[in-house]
Length: 81
Image 1: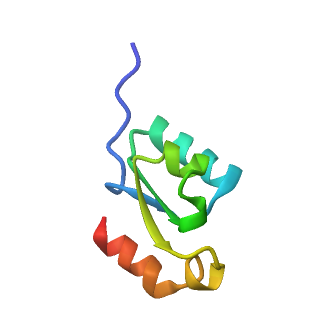
Image 2: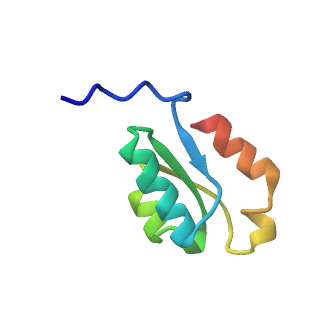
């Protein structure tokens, strides 16, 4: 019989990435029973990483400079989850 895994070092993991890398992170986190939050722009709202994450937060319009690279929007997403 396998002993249960130790509790995670944190309660939730925010993923500030998209695509295959984000999916790998989400799968691994879920395997470790760690909830995930995917941040995304409006154009990425139907992306796989958003669909597979435990939660998602839209951080702005399609332009990376107005969403993924906007540190105020990323920090707001962190604080809101």
